[in-house]
Length: 309
Image (tube, rainbow, N blue to C red; front, side, top):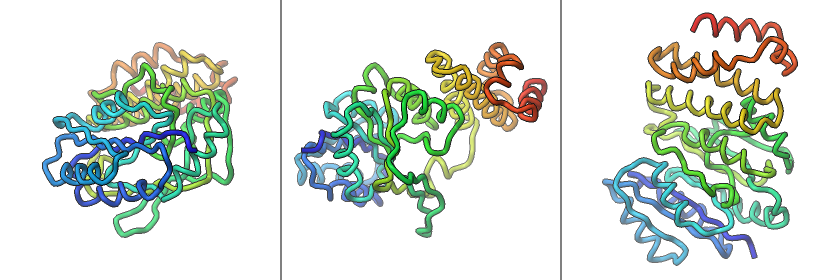
């Protein structure tokens, strides 16, 4: 028997795509699979679709709330879920059939692994594949390996909730930050990776992320989005500093946060001033930069950012 799994799906005005999303995971007949559909105040027919699926499938639970955003919706489901593992699906995306069952079977044999990342394909409106996160083989990373990659912004660790299966225990005491409407997944992933013992990069399966016209990643860049993503990178550095797994990781996370905050402040100078001031105050010295593998050329760029902001 596979371990039990909670699939959390926040739903807001997704009637056009919702059935395809749900069918992609309900086609897997594994025991212990439980879907949580959280309707976030939809004004279209999404709630009717959710109720229809709940009537046909005993493993579907519907939660209704006033519109409060996807973070609040996911938090509501996390508070209810009792399954061993948790995964996320957006209401307009799909998961390749078999993906979850195959990876759960692997996790059953490796209980020391607290999170599993599986492949992601980004699908354009015309059906073409515009981006991929793929793994050539099964790789298990220690916490040290994970944080070295995470603090460098390694593309093999994408900062999305989806495309991953998590042990539910690493969510204990944590909530998705509801004040963020963008990059909230990246923000919480720093906390989740701090709690994880080991993670797996799995080559099996696919998450299909569809580039919808109204998706947050497709709509115009705003001051709010810029502030949210800058805050997420700053939080990554804060968590790295608390963990202190290696000084090089902390310094690289500091550099990543500075670069992102400076880039966003060029567009919106009023934002993230508090975070920038903290980074300036906590600046590593030249010897620390060099010991972390930062080149002289990179140092010039760092100091230029500090002097000009």
